[in-house]
Amino acid sequence: MSPPDMLIETVRIALRSILRNAMRSILTVLGVVIGVAAVIAMVTVGQGSKAQVTADVSKLGTNVLMVLPGQEPMASGPMGTGADLFTLRDVERVERALDSVALAAPIAQTRGRVVFGNENRRTDIVGTDNRYFDAARWQLASGRVFDPGEIRAGRPVCVLGETVRAALFGAADPVGEAVRIGALSCRVVGVLQSKGASTFGSDQDDFVIMPIRTFHRRVAGTTDVAVMYLSLREGASVGRATDEVEALLRELRRIGPGEDDDFAVMDMKQLETMLSGITDVLTGLLSAVAAVSLVVGGIGIMNIMLVSVTERTREIGIRLAIGAQARQVMVQFLVEAIVLSGLGGLIGIGLGLALAFAGARWLAVPFAPDPGIILLAFGVSVLVGVVFGVFPARRAARLDPIEALRHE
Image 1 (tube, helix red, strand yellow):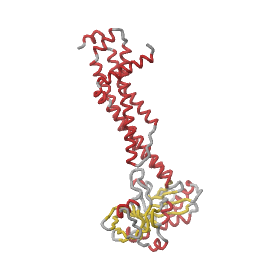
Image 2 (cartoon, helix red, strand yellow; image 1 turned 90 degrees about the horizontal axis):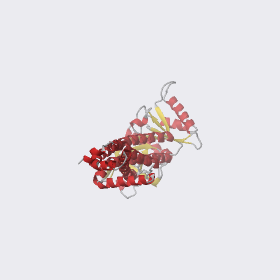
Image 3 (cartoon, helix red, strand yellow; image 1 turned 180 degrees about the vertical axis):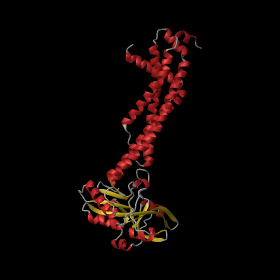
Image 4 (spheres, helix red, strand yellow; image 1 turned 90 degrees about the vertical axis):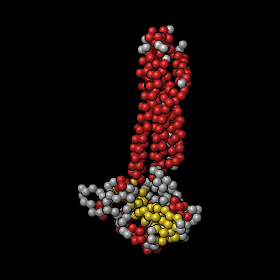
């Protein structure tokens, strides 16, 4: 019999042995199935989240800078609280003094409850002006943005995010209606188009925007600006603009030579890299935890193969007595372990892709399976069969034929 035919026959015998105890075989490879499925699901959802990060950041454009107070502003939330906040004067100075900056939008934010009739919702209250709509590329679904007189006078008008609109007004158009924010009655002048959930599941439409002077006087009671959005002029170098902004802010905030900045200037590429890094770390940690199941599955395979050797001792003795070589017996049991783990790997791949698809739909991220990871997961499952199948196979090959034939 030629080597390929011998291999096919060995696999056929292995499958017959596995199917003879189907339930036991299923339970044995359950650890491999769970491990492979979990790793594929985690990595696939992680890749989809990373792609979503890129897509979300690209919506803001490549010529946008975000300036936040503190050296590590993202550590305490998106508005940053690590140092003194900015002022409206800082924003105006940056816009006027730097040729590379087309516009600078101030942002201040707090949490509050918005009420209309019998409906209410706790949401983000954002103070800014019309420059923010341009810098962040927001489009109106209905109504209008603020007029210059409303911004200068700090009038109580507001623009709603889609989530707030739906919660308070259902299917109705709220333009012209008045909502209450704390003790402030605020007339709705516009509604923004929905952007949906962000990469990490936060709702990008859950906020109310009002003129920043209104926010300062009637809501916050301060004149602080938590974030500056800077939109650069067409063709401006992001690196050069970043250097200019840093130099100007060091002057405005009286930071001496050799002293560390108490603010951070982030371009969209940096933001994308940071968010992608967070996604990669989380994916790696979860995948490492899931991979432990593969080791557990390998131990299960070794255990069941040892049981199989004991149960088939007489069969092994007969084979050895009629001329089978120890090497052939070893190969037979090793192939059984590999086939068992390989089947678990195939089932795990199917289950993992199904879970990844469901997870991607639930998180609203792209379904992005990686063929390399799928092949690697299957290869690891086969390797588990090899590693944990060697000891039982060697034990079977070393049985004494006489003693094996006497076994009951």
